[in-house]
Structure formats: C-alpha cells, structure tokens
Image 1 (cartoon, rainbow, N blue to C red):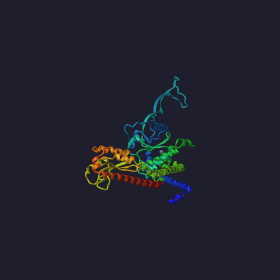
Image 2 (image 1 turned 135 degrees about the vertical axis):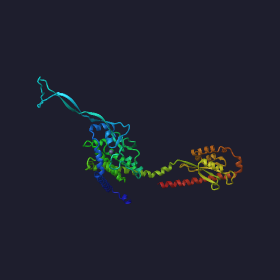
Image 3 (image 1 turned 90 degrees about the vertical axis):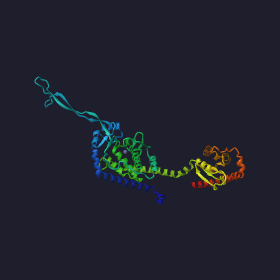
Image 4 (image 1 turned 60 degrees about the horizontal axis):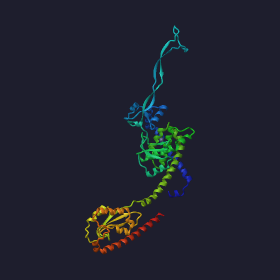
Length: 472
Ligand SMILES: [Zn+2]
C-alpha cells in the first residue's frame, strides 16, 4: 500500500469513494428488498395492522403528552396482543368518537318537505332517532409502558459487539459531529435522538460499541440533513418522518460499512420498516443525498481520527515526562558497598525498618543503612541513605544534594523513619563513640558517596542528551 500513498491522486480517490458509496447503497437496496419478501415481514405487517390509525388530532395529543411514543394501543388492545400495561403507568388521553342516538319530537313532513297538518290545522308531530357525533376522552398506552409477549420484529432489535479502535473512532465521530453528542438514560426505549431545538444528540447509555457508533451516525445524519433550517429551505416544505428515517439509517449503514462495521441485521429492517411501500420510494428518491452525506461524514471522521492517532503517537513522551515521582527504600548491611552483605531494595519504609532491625549491628560487613530511591524526572541524583549506623542522614544530604533533601517525598521519608524508629539519634548530636570507633569508615563513605553522586550525574546526563537526539 506504500506506493498507493506516494502516488496519491485526488481525482482517483474521489472516484473510488463514489464507487464505494454506490456499492454499499446497492447492497442496502438488495438487503431491504429481501426483507420485503420475507415471511417475518408479513408477520410484522400483520401486527402493525392491528394498531389503530389515529387521526391527526390524536397524534398531536399523543405527541404533546408523550413525545417519545412509538406505538400506541388501548389497554384491551395490548391485552389481545399478549401484553399488559405496567403498574403505575398513566394513560395518554386521546379523543375517541362516541356517537349516540337521541330521540326528538319534530314536525312530520310530507314528500315535498311541507309540514303535515291535522284536522285542527296544527302540525302533526312525530318522534325520530337522530345520530349525534361526539367524542369522549379515552386512554391509550405506548409500547414502552407495556410488558409481555414481544412483538414480532424484523431484524435485530439492538446491535451487539465491539469495534476495533473504538475509543479513537468514537472520539473522532464526536469531533466530526455537527452538534454535541452526549450519553444519557433515555426513557421509553429510544436508542438516541437529535434535539432539533437544542441542537444536540443524545445516545442511550449502556449499549454495545457497534450500537453506539451506528446510533451516533444515524443521529448525525438527522442533524446534518433534517435540522430545522434544512427542512425550511426545502421546496416541498419538509420531509415526512418515514423519509427522514430511511435517509438517516441508510447514511448510518453506509458510513459503518466503510469503517468495517456491519449493521445490516438492524439497518435493513429499519429501512424496510419505515418504507411506505415495497418499491422503497423513500430510499430510491434519496440515494444521492445518502451517498453524498455518507461520503462527507466519512471524510470528516477520517480526518479527525488521523489527527487523534498522530496526537497519540506523541503521547508516550508526554506521559513519561509527567510521570509522578515515586520513592522506594532499600536496606544495606554495608552502606558503603551494597554488594557486601545483605541488600534489599524496592521496599516500603515499614519493610525496610523491619529488615534493618533484624540485622545485628555487630556484623562485620560495615555500617548498616536504610536508604531511599527517588524516581523523579526533574532530579538527576536519586539514591541516598536515610539512616546510617543509627543516625539520620538529613544533614549530610542537605550539604551534598540539597535538591534531593528538599524534595517533599524525601522530607516525608525522614519524618516517617523517625516516627518508626524513635530511638534514632538526632543527627546534629555528634555520636562521639561511633566517631571514635569508625573514623576511617566515615570518611571513606563520604568520599565514595561524592564519587557515586558525580558518576550518577554523568550517567543520567548522557542518557538525557541521547533521548533529546531521538526526539529530533
Ligand atoms: Zn431517526
């Protein structure tokens, strides 16, 4: 693929993309038309036919009371379908026609429409039944307010599975989205929505990665194609709900296919479900819009993803530089030559004190010591004794490596070790006995330490300058 990149031809790339979009939408058309032929689709239609067709006014009443309603049915209607309304659910009030008959006394008319008179010249009366058209409020319930036998579905009701590189892809999708995307607990079973007034997208929390990506792109397609301005600008005065849903899902299917995410189990059925006829008029009319919108979204997501990947490649260095300082402790039987006698490292201070106490002070390997090892990117030197031969080494450290002595972790270590070993002699107070006994050892130790510090400084500096070069 290397020479594909070096011979990048924008015209060819655009043609390739066009062809890819056509291939994918062709597969979509094929898949949707197969759904129409399936037995499952017939069952689905049969069930849908059982749902009442509400009047425009009633649909408005439903929308006002339960904006996320999808399928509404009366209490008994649900019962007949093997579903029941959940406890505590409040009905959506709509108006049902309630015709009634009334008896009325009126003048009897002859064939010509003239009142018939009796022998006294008075109009003859008769009682007639008349039909009065009236409405009474009744309750209907949305699918989300019910439980029981599942309704026949075509295709998967929710996509499962994970997406390779999900974190980066989803971040790129969010950045490429025309409006902000957030997760929330959406009541009523919807997987996502595009809020046309607040111009934002919400996605149901707790779904699979595949479903999250698919839903995000579906809602992005709504935000891009079906926002209020786009709809107002149309000559036809705005699209129908079914046309919008077919477009959004087709765009989502196409973009997902491009990124290697297969949503056909869900998308084919969704498009079929919203199509008003087996000829798929919505899909056929919208093919160009779908292909263009999908291609634009792919380009935008690709760009953002590449930028994110490039950023991440830089990241390890930044991570290393901001690594939190760490401190560990060692115990040496001989503070001058760690290779002589026992030497334990990478300990907690408590462990170190424990081991230190177990080493008899009269061992001949030298003066036992507790030391610390500080890992801090900003300080070159990192090792020093805390306690040597029963004495704190804070003063020595201040003189030799002041920046280490001032480090908060080191200061805390000195405090803590004093708490754990209150018997330690204060450093300022000269231990004359020890000085008398080990004058030589003391001086050798100091000398060695100076050398060690110098060596370490040299080593770390070389390492640092090497690293700088690699960065270039
Ligand atoms: Zn939608």
